[in-house]
Image (cartoon, rainbow, N blue to C red):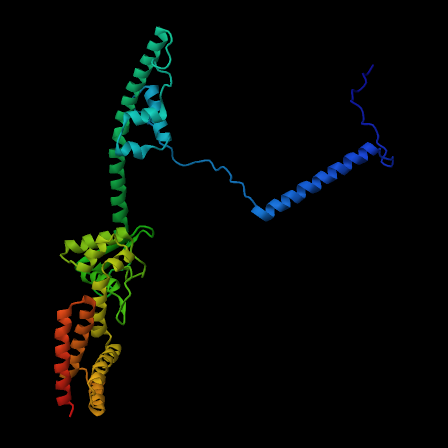
Length: 372
């Protein structure tokens, strides 16, 4: 005879159309009110604070340092070394390995005989355990002392290998100015792109000096040195490398040395050596900017000519001479006198200013006689 199939049974039928009791209606109303209140409170919080993103925990899957398995050491020493390496205090150990610091930071007994006076056997057990712990720390320290030397050699080898690889991958074989193979090559190494750029020593030196002594009219506009090939600013490491290579070839520059003294900071450099840069800007204005420099010399001449009621016809002749005859002796004298006047203004030297005023009066008389 077949046994009946076991089953739990069906849930009782619920009449959907039956009227709800007053208690059920009150419960439903309370639930609706609570849900509305919670939604209103949440919306107000969002208006005040905004959407709060919960910071997710991202586990670390990178390299972890540990004592190699082939190194003969006890389990206690191995665990202590691994504990030090896992707690990322390797820099502290690299600079100065201090047993007390490591001992107190990582492992120490809180119970001492002066604080807790228990049985003699327990105190001896604690003291022996502490001595054993110190001995294991000493052995762990012997292993940790070797790591900075080892990593220093590895990093030196990696740096040398990366340098050689970058020098092999040279982007330009000819100098950008001379269009020839450099006889005194200076390499700018770009580690990010794994390449290098080669220049003649004199070319890169002049390019760096021109950027630092850059000016507009007679105003200082110094800028960071750049790579002439890519027009990207050189990093402090690249600047150190370039200056060391220039010194090997016997090329020295006072402006580059002062820029290095300011730790390659262009703001500190312009503030510290503002007077020198201003004088160089005045010299560059009169030497390179001939078009605007002639107008500066004309303004300088007219300012003094108006004070002594210089004749207008002779004044116009001299202005025409300064503008259209740059190789004339009078023009050259007015150029040099104007340059010296603006430089002496920056130096604040009264004796120099007095001699320049004497020279101006003498030159005005000479130009008056020569512009008949």
